[in-house]
Amino acid sequence: MIKGSHFRFNKQERSGIFFLLLIIFIFQGIYFYVKAKPFSTSPAVKVNTTEQAHLDSLKGLAQMDAGKIFPFNPNYITDHKGYALGMSLEELDRLFDYRDKNKFINSAEEFQKVTQISDSLLNKIAPYFKFPAWAKTASVIQKKSNQKRSEIYEVGDLNQATAEELMRVNGVGPTLSKRIVKFRDRLGGFVVNEQLYDVYGLEPEVVQRTLKRFQILQPPVIKKININQATAEELSQLVYINQDMALEIVLHRKRNGPFSSLDELVGVGAFPTDRIERIKLYLTL
Image 1 (cartoon, rainbow, N blue to C red):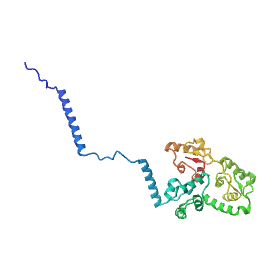
Image 2 (cartoon, rainbow, N blue to C red; image 1 turned 90 degrees about the horizontal axis):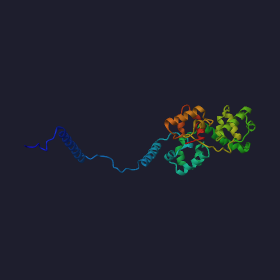
Image 3 (cartoon, rainbow, N blue to C red; image 1 turned 90 degrees about the vertical axis):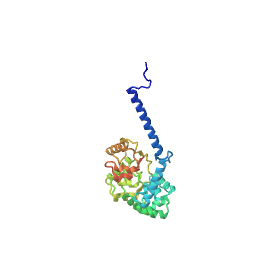
Image 4 (cartoon, rainbow, N blue to C red; image 1 turned 120 degrees about the vertical axis):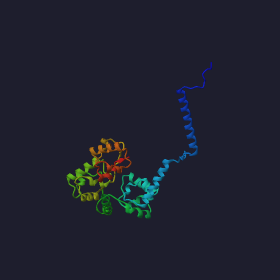
């Protein structure tokens, strides 16, 4: 009797062998294809993309500003802006030190005096300086006050003046003098002379006469509020920010992430853009 062959396969086994051969054939095809056409990928070793991007951004900013300069307030020049304008680190440090003392630059001449930049650089960038309207008025007042100060009277400290002393200024009566003192107390002391313009009911002409008699001789020490960490309650403690605006700032921060610049505040709801320079005195990032 002839026994059955050991090499006979049933239908399921034949299907398995077929698929095995098919898989081997596919992998062989992929191998020869890759060998014939290697992938054109970038090299595994790469440069430091973060540092390179930073350098490229600086270069791009410099090229952009070199071609066209937009009007700006020189009191708030950043490191990048100063670099693009051609200022040295020492000149920028002098400006930053001056601002850290809560002092404002009100003219191109004063900018050069503080930073000690060259005449050629000043002539190049000064036409683009944009000072607030009150800064120009304050600059004129300061010059006239300095010229006549010794001839008329000794200037008193605006942060120490009593309501009775303020009433010596023509146009400042009992109501306005008390209002000035009350506003000063809410601020914790005037930081810059120009804040006197913010006293309700005080006409610009009266402010000018007041600043001839009183100047900020001892500015207060300001503990600035971190705009990216403060609560709405903390922000509303500022004279210039009410409760509703404080809530809008916090909500904007939650939706859009931390502020990268204090100037971004002007895009928050009904933010008082005309007071942005004053408000910046009390905030930090």
